Length: 351
Image (cartoon, rainbow, N blue to C red; front, side, top):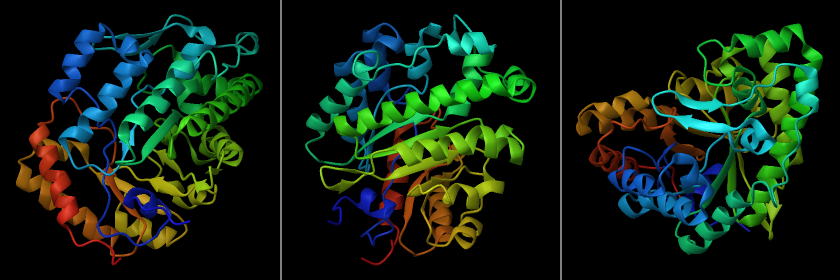
């Protein structure tokens, strides 16, 4: 049965009446209503771990903008947190773990979280959001890629070069492989639990795969994601569940990503959409890829740039408009509203 929502249709490369749009981090600090809810929660992790609050902020951008999908409000580091590493979100620093994982013994000691108990707050949020959406738009679930999670787990925080993670990958490959194996198992179960709770599509965020060499990317980023794709529920209640893979900095590896069996590939803003379309053809849908920094420009400039992106992707079915990475806190919500209207007003693939 063909889906009715244009977002799900585009992911299956079916004709749509207009190009669908959603925005990475669309529920976030650029919205005053989000900041108010975040202050009421007291902390970011409380916001994530309280299903009612996570539902509230997930729906906020949909109440303000005519977006074509909702994305679960959560964090990519929920799995390492559930493994007992002690996640804290530090103001002006980002995520920080109380404990790191830098040896085979430390990897072996990690538990694999049970989504039904250790991550129940996430699946409860998914179920609540689906109920509150009333099928207005589809709901996207997500997880971080094993390589991205490993980078934070090994370093203990963000890094410019993730030198400790690369040191384990190349200096202690058995330890890194053991960590990848656990993260593949945990992430597959986590995403499947989101699907069973009501997620209608899932995206894997591979934020740091682009920091690797080609051989390193194949082994430590792509291969674990391939295993996750192979293990996911691809149909639930008789409906196809599309899978989106997004690697930031993946311009060299588009064909490799398309070969995983994913349904769609996210493109960052450094990739020319027309070139990506030529290289990939109709093998997978493409998502992206306006530079998030352009949103700081006047609204008319943003809309012109959006139309340029849309023209570059071409008229063929299989494009979901998005930013090339997450929206940043300083963006004016009115600019986002103008962007959404411009994308919808653009002549989409013929239906």
